[in-house]
Length: 278
Image (cartoon, one colour):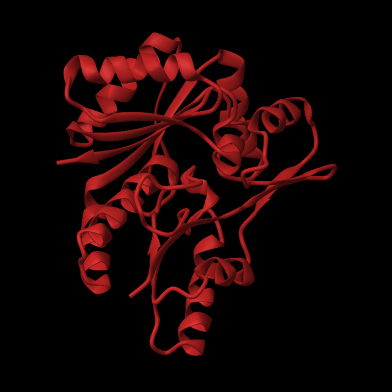
């Protein structure tokens, strides 16, 4: 039996460190002047620099049904992961693609997961799926195990700017304006419904990093794996990893870069952490 893991590009993954077939379906970032496709050819540095000086409206577009179908290939079992359905139509497009795929190939199956999140939390779910497939587990067993594991994963983000989130109606524009004027760091999470929920606001990098770890612990973190993505903020990401490991020396904290979609929302300096809780 052949398998493939497919995700939209909000997972910040282009490949897997595992011998399992993998594909990433790109989202798009659109302005009145330019369109950025979130694939391997995208320079997030160029995109974020452009968006910092751009004063018009911007938006995002999810992959279409045809994009998902193309990524499924000819696999007997497809495991598809999407950004939270509360913020994007990617899940609905993948669902329709799965229905078409199964209708055309009655002997094949698409296992679809609405991550109710993005970024590092999606990475953890995908890693779990790959590990179980390598162990030779049956597709249905893998799917059930991953859905159960989803109850133990969380996402926290820390942002220096809310401009793009405000422009897309994700947060109150007044909150974004006041936070920017006061130089506040905004710390939030993906709620159980997959919506953005602000947890706290604070000034200063050191205080923000301490609050991130504090919020992680409040949510049940006890030293499990962490997938930390940053938007052109390597030094601070390394500081946060050190802060986590100071309390949990054996913690598996892996640092990565946000790709196009997550860079658009996190903006330069933003951090996103997927982590496992007990």
